[in-house]
Amino acid sequence: MKTLRDLLDEGVSGRTVLVRSDLNVPIEDGAITDAGRIEASAPTLRALADAGARVIVAAHLGRPKGAPDRTLSLAPVAATLGEILGRTVELSEDVVGPSARSRSAALHNGEVLLLENVRFDARETSKSTDERAELADALVALTGSGGAFVSDGFGVVHRKQASVYDVAQRLPHYAGGLVSTEVDVLAKLTGGAEKPYAVVLGGSKVSDKLAVIEALAPKVDGLFIGGAMCFTFLAAQGHPVGDSLLQSEMIDTCKDLLERFGAKIYLPTDLVVAEAFSAATPVHTVAATEIPEGHMGLDVGPATVARFAEGLHTARTIFWNGPMGVFEMANFAGGTRGVAEAIIAATGDGAFSVVGGGDSAAAVRLLGLPEDGFSHISTGGGASLEYLEGKELPGLSVLET
Ligand code: 3PG
Ligand code: MG
Image 1 (tube, rainbow, N blue to C red):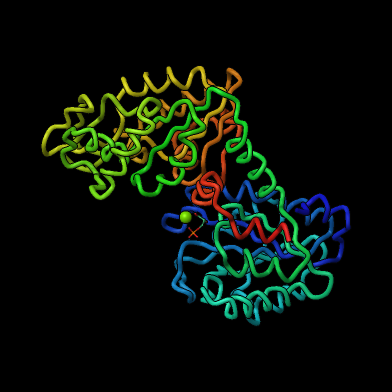
Image 2: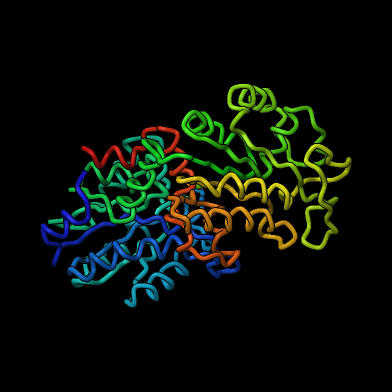
């Protein structure tokens, strides 16, 4: 796989380089609430611009229905990217239309153009190779002669989409700095991780994490489970879960996992419960096996945090994906904060720790925890999970060709 370093060594001054970045950030009322992915994407873009490339960035925001949607414009992203890079970042009004074409042609060395949300074009996510090919050809045409493609959107490498996959088949292609780093880090978690190896999983659905549990459980020494997915495990053990989120169709699967890996699976021993899903509701801490009727578990309790922390304390490798509770509400943030702090402490003692992107990465920043307290915070939610599951990621394998 060729890397950004190879491209820079070839020389990019005066060349137009198309970069796929993952700038899919949470936005509320027009304001970016977590710019982590933009920050993480900046170094590759800066390196190219500094070396005199004319940089065109393709990125998506959310899941528009294959047509322009003003609420999913990349305009706030362009502004923030510009601030981070300390350069003007132009935004085209379309993906590969007249605006994108004229602005691309007008780029000078070192200038950066962001194309409007690439998913405004239905061909981006089309299942038809021919349809994706049309868009890929149009994206490639923006680069003129001497163009190159840098794949830097780690969070989308599990997607076989025009700007991720098909463009790489049409241009000399390179893994960007972010993709290279992510792959190096995740490779350490799949092969030969230093032991003890602890994996902390949370989030709402067992079904989302099933494949990663299957892939990692045989390799790890402790699997610590919090978040709403713990209720399906508690139900599998025969405990009442009240009104807690439950995936009843997964109970048998959880029974089977407990049978095979029970000795290394750690479930919560206490929970923070409430009668309503609300920041204002009164909360109680109860034993995990005794969730009262009419109550739902919304966070793991302090005894659980202490028990998980004890297990994490001696770990040499830690992977964490998924919050322990509804961390967005202060009354249910204690579990996520406590477990994150335990991972930070272990990292301070020399453990190699990785936060799998998505919600857990957002939690770290939202709770004001030090990002450098972890060895690596991934920008890929689904992509990092699929990598750890051992799946082939189209956006990575295409770079090998
Ligand atoms: C993400 O946020 O997970 C990535 O940006 C990919 O987005 P997607 O799940 O909509 O393809
Ligand atoms: Mg996703």
